[in-house]
Every structure is written in C-alpha cells, then in structure tokens.
Image (cartoon, rainbow, N blue to C red; front, side, top):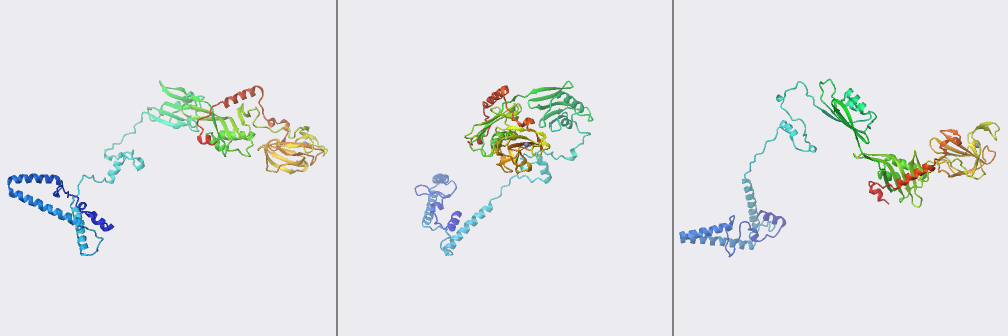
Length: 538
Ligand SMILES: [Zn+2]
C-alpha cells in the first residue's frame, strides 16, 4: 500500500489492479466463496467449516446465523473487487491535485503512513547482553593478549600488565643455562667476532689452534652455544661452534670431555663452468649482464674483445656472444664465479672471433696473443739503419742522444701505427719535421718523425697497422727515413729492448694444450639459466 502510494505519486503510474492491491491476506478461493483475511486463511476456513458443522449439530438457528455471516463477508469482498476494478481505490496523488478526491486520497495516504509509523514505534527494542566498554587501563592490559595482526596495530608480545602488589623482587637475575648466538664473521675476522660474542680467551686460543690454516670469509656466519658458568666473573664456556670455514668446508667445534674438538664437514662443490650465449643487442655489456654474467667478468670480456674486434663501428643486432666463466656451485646452494675462460663473438658476414684463457693470458684460437704488442717495424719491408743511444748526429755534427731508432725507406712508403691508440700530436715539431705521436695507454706512446705526409689529426683514434702517413725527410734529416720513438711513462726507451713490444704467441706443446682446451670449452653445454629475453632476441 505504502509503496503503491509513493510509487504512483512520484512516477505518475497507473494504479495496478485490485487483486494485486489486496493480495496480502486476501486470497479468494474457488467457487466464488472467500476466505477470511486472517493469517493462514485456508486453515481458518477449514476450522470455520468444522465449527459450522459442530454448531449445526447444536442448533439450526446458530447454523442460519453462520450462513448469513458468510454471505455478508462474500458481498463485502465482491464490493471491494468491483471498486478496485473501477479504479475507485486508487491513491494516485499525481492527478487532479487539490481536488476533493485528491484530498481524500492524500488523507488516506497520510493515514497509512501515520499508521505504519505508529506501528513501528510500538515495536519494543530487544535487549541483549552487551558487554560494557573497557576502561583505558583494562584495554591496555588486554592488548598483549589480543590475537590481531601486527599490521593492524596489535602489540602482541608485549609483557602483560601485572599488578605491582603481586611482584616480589629477586635477589639477582637468574643465569640462563645456555646462550645461543648467530654472528657474522665480518671484516675483523673470526677471533674478533667470537670475542665480542663473549667467548673467553682460553676458548678463543683453542679455536684458533683448531682452525689454523682456515680463513673464513667476511660474509660467513657462525653459530655458537655458550654454556653455564660457575660465577658471573668468568666468561661462559664455549659449548659448540659451527661455521663455514671455506666455500667447500663446514667445521663444527664442540666440547667433548671438557676439551674442544673440531669436525670437518666437506661441502660438495660442482665446478662446471657457466656457459651463456645470446644476442649482443644494442649494448654488449648490457646483454652480458642480463644473461647473468657478473659485472667483472662481463667487463673482462669486453676489454679482451676490444683488443681483437673493432667495436667502433658497433655490433649488429644479429651478432651473438658466447661466454664461459668459472663457476663453483656448493651443494648448500651458494654460487661463486671466477675467471673468464672463453669468449666468442659471432658477427654477421665475419669469421667468429674466439679467445681463451691460457697460462695467465688470453689468446686467439690460433694461439696468437690477444694483447698485441707494438709492431717492431712500423714501416713495411724497412730495415733499421740507426740504433738507440749516444751517437754523433749526422746533421748537427756533434754527439747527442738518439732517442729512437731509424728505419731507412723510400719517400712515400706508408708508416703504420705501431699499436692502437689516440693521436696526441700531428704536425710540424722542430727538428722532427712532420711528426705524429700516438698515445696507446696511460704509460705508452710512440712517435714518428720526418714524415712527408700525415694522414691523421690530433684526437683521432687509430688501429694497430693503420697507415698514419708516409716516409719523408722533413726537419733535421739527411735523407728519407722514419725516425721511430717509444715513450714509456714519458721517457724515451729503446724499442728493441722492450719485452712487451712483441705480442705473445703460443707454439708447440702449449699451443696443442691450448687448442685441446678450446675444443673442450666449445663442447660445453649451454646453461639453462640464461634469461629467455636474451635467448629470444635473435
Ligand atoms: Zn732518428
């Protein structure tokens, strides 16, 4: 009813049919007869019928009254049905506003709302046993016992509040029978770590004796147990100590019959090297790092490859790297990486470049040293005409230091950079005439004098063997030749005497051994651990 009242006034809907309006409680039964609007009207009408039968047995008068009553109710119901069907019981407040009919409908609606409110107020509240709120002190005392996540602010674990009157002070704090400690060995070493953990001098000396020759790393952890002591003035005795003494060794020190004894527990280590391959992408260093190669080994790979591969033009997207580094995997899960053993670059349209570690240095697959020394002769097919040292100058006519070596060659013969580096000087340089100096690293530089032509500019990078100009006779010179100087840490040195000047090269038995090793590395399976992103880039 209420819903109908507001619904139609708000939305100006047509009233629904009488059946629906009077649905609750009023359920017309079959054969035109009606049931009374009581809860469970079907049962009620049955009961009425039974009562009617009972009354009939008592007297015909009462029976006639009951029949008349039923007929009157049926008539009322039919009147209501007719009125509903004609729309007489419509409470639509949207039509004919303020008319007499409207006021009647408004009155009926108000009466219905009022009745509902009045009925609502008659409902008595149900009283339940609600616990009273905790006082702040009670609440504080209860907090440590709460079962609530710490994230929600629980302080579970705090000592509960105890009534001070129940406390009885102890004469002295009782000693714990044993103390367990876990400590990091740290940079100061094991002895210092044990001393700060409370191990006494005698035990410390015993541990040092047992651990002689073992040097646990700074990152390793030690677990120790200190036992009960007789008095508080002496340190607790060391009961047991367990630590990782080396990558492949665990030691356990324990007290047996009063003396400390050590047990060595070897840790199995798999030393299969790690092999990773992948696309060089836009940055070789980044590709190596994302393939799981540690920084130091990735840098070593790039540094060694730089000696034999010209990175200046960059690597192509389809170029690939192949790298093997030493790897130790302990059965306890730790992984340790070592030296770069093998590296290869596969560049599109070029032969693959492979380097391998052998006896302290890196070599190309051919056995040629990766670190090429300076070329002994920076002009093709020339012979040395004058050595290094004091000599009588051919032009000046007096003795002076000859700070280089001379190679006689015809004018226009190309002069080659003795090593890769950066041109630090190119131009006229007094008696040197047309002169070029190349800086190879922070210690080493070479210079070329009396040139007829210069092909390079200062600041330009040059490769070993690149033509930097041509032989001539400019400056203080008696004829076409190359005056060649080598500077080590700023001092002119005799190139002939320099050991490093020639690149190392493997030969004979060591070359055989190296090439066998290279074959073993080439056959090493790839690691599964290489990230997919690198493998999938090609
Ligand atoms: Zn000279």
